[in-house]
Image (tube, rainbow, N blue to C red):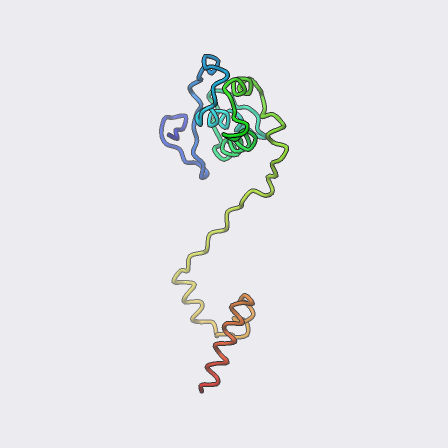
Length: 162
């Protein structure tokens, strides 16, 4: 659950914030046992600092960075050919930064960017559009080539019927 430092839910700047308050002693787990989803999640949280640096107990978690870190770990350690063990996870928990072998193949520029939200049409916009004279050439020029071709086809068909 996302909480802020005052104990209430926090959804500041579109990210859930979580304070790392508990520390699990992973050294008590058999090092040859396969790492669980929660272990991967904990590693993602651990390396959610800027440039995949480790955050300390009590620091805020950037969930976007945590999910990227977790995905980078999964990219090397898939469940079938090269699974992550608790022994490897224990070593990683002691590190100050995510090891370079996880980050070297990641290209942040290829990360999906959110499309801008469409502006809502207001009554004022509609009133301004009604006042302005219709300019068919400007309307035609602002269309995509596909829409312009469809509009031209439709107008040609209408002209033939008339």
